[in-house]
Image (cartoon, rainbow, N blue to C red):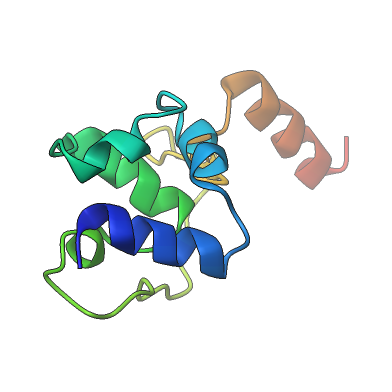
Length: 106
């Protein structure tokens, strides 16, 4: 199974079009379609894997485990070295400030 076929399979399972996956990953609308003839960059592959909640290893066919081993992680929201994401995209700093205020009850 090719990278494109694996992406299609997961997208379909999640009710997403390839165009929607590309948009959520922040890559060009037709980038994923080109993966049938072109090898994707590692960065784009990681972005798509993040949107589909899978690993790059699965997309590359190195494992058959579709899902990530997601365990609960504790982080301090004030830790500047932690990148918070939502839907696979980084949360903008101004939104993080709003979230922090809401959590503090202010």
